[in-house]
Length: 327
Ligand code: MLT
Image 1 (tube, rainbow, N blue to C red):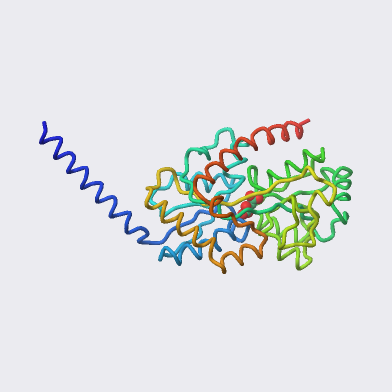
Image 2 (cartoon, rainbow, N blue to C red):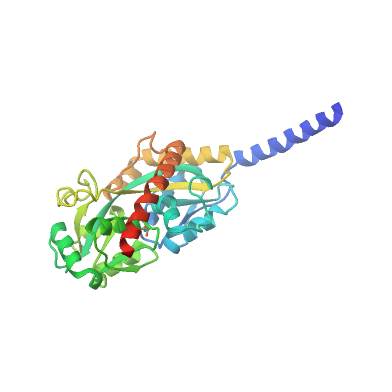
């Protein structure tokens, strides 16, 4: 009996040592970051900027795979089911890991249980943007125009559960009206149509918008934040512009599938930390209006707490907003 126990212990130690040395070599090949929206949009931009630095630290290519659909839940479902070995991770956000459970009763993942949090990458303030030729010159006129024209105007969003859908749903419930809603596979294609004038307005993350607002191809009527963004200082806050209750901010964060080995997670967490401390990476994110989390705010524990509080927060808000919308 004693011998059996001893040999079992030796076998376990060998297996453990094998697993530990396999992970010690991580990463030995390219890492894929699943972005659950179209290329060129806010989540993709944040993933590519941070991914470039992750690759330098980890010594392997970090490639982005865009798996769009169902407001980001298609890509996140797929990535959550990947082998938890650190070679497939994902960029989730306030929609996929906060709002979506309230909108998809049969969702195949639970944001609070089915992931290994790696870290918050960027806070992304929300702006209300309109096409260049939109008749309203400011947010007050926009509200009046939306109330008067309702379904005659179009809002562009990235699918039920996305940040753009969720935040504009909140906006509609505050204004007390609804408009036609046009779905895209991300806000990159939505923005193309806004620039082209095929749609009228949207609520989007600042990182997607700075260059087009600066170029005068679209107009930003308000930033739903307490302070103006240093990236677009000429855009008033929603409070300054007369809609103080529209306060909302989004975020993008890295997750692994549930069960990532601790040493693999630690390497990814360390690499992200380095990326967010790197001057060049910070500059690029800040120029686009991102808010870079401090050390504590970007930790896996802080991300897990954020996800739990966002799921709790968005559930009742969205249910109330959608119930009002049906009336
Ligand atoms: C995107 O990258 O297209 C988005 O983050 C869209 C959204 O959630 O609104």
